[in-house]
Image 1 (cartoon, rainbow, N blue to C red):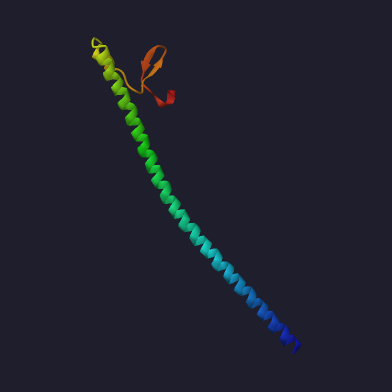
Image 2: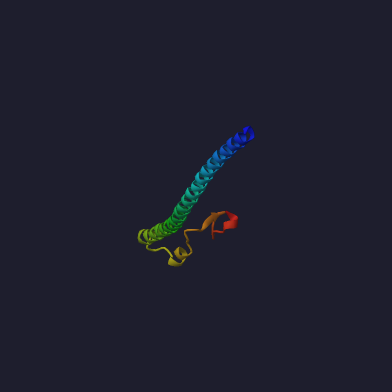
Amino acid sequence: AKDRKTFTDEIAHLRGQVATQKDQLASSLKEKEEAASQRDVLSGEKAALEEMVEGLQIEVGASYDSGFQFALEQLKIVFPDLDESKLDELDALNKIVDGRLVPFSSDAA
């Protein structure tokens, strides 16, 4: 009878542990699902931000080139006798090396 009581108590104790483990597992699975959902949301936001950055980079480049072209137009007005073919050699990306204009190259940067 005592052994039966011990086994019954042990079974009740183990059932309690199983219930606790099930609750912890359910909680962990819920946290995992929430983390996966948050990851998906953040991945979408990251993609949108990367697209925005790319668009802004293009916009900045276009604005830079537009400003350079505007400066060339001002030169033509202020110095009407300038040789237009020389102005055509100018480029927003040229560099000055040893007193000469040279085309930009990324490996020389």
